[in-house]
Length: 265
Image (tube, rainbow, N blue to C red; front, top):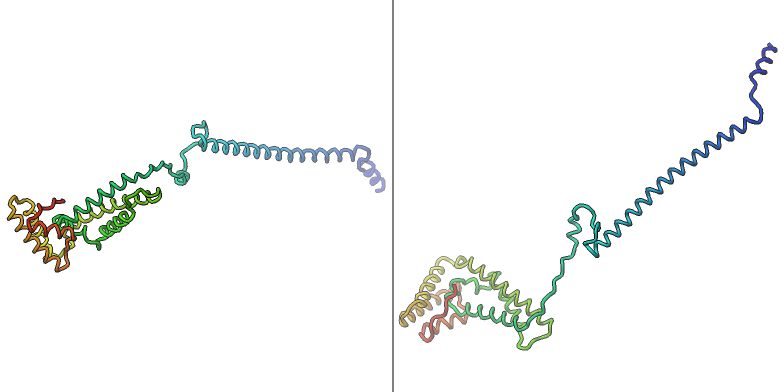
């Protein structure tokens, strides 16, 4: 038994000598070098990707800046259509505003004043468009306010530029309100008047039309007088009231002193 154990230890004892620890050290070094090389390779790849991204971003930024100053720069715009959101936020192109011409603005307002005055002096036109004299109608009320504002800004001498600009704006608004009021009155006509008073208005319109078209002074004067009688009924009921200028023109025509006023369709 002892001989067998001695024989086993003799042939199975561990290898001893100077090469055992050296092999372990070399193996450890090789493993460490391999790990460090892998880490270095990963870091190098990440650094390369980051560098490419930074360079690409800088180039794209320079192209966009160049495109803002010169739209014809080649490659300035990114591919594809411009997003709608960018288009919405682009300010509209500014257009130079012409200097206000005081004389032209006054002439334009004088034209409006004349057109409005002719309407108010024509009884036949008032009866055909009674809403145009009724300030309770919204469009007529807006016109009267706009006309009054322009009238308040009108002066004989040319004012400073700021006043001139305000007057030009007021005249433009008055013209627009006048057209809107006339359009509304054309649509309304006699629809706001009760049926009984509407028949009186229609008789008065027929008499005024007869007086306008008549070639005989006596017939024309009689027609105006009968029309005045019909309009007196409307005035008493409060349905339709002629403006003072129209009432005065009708009274003068009824006396046969002046020819009939021009018709406004």
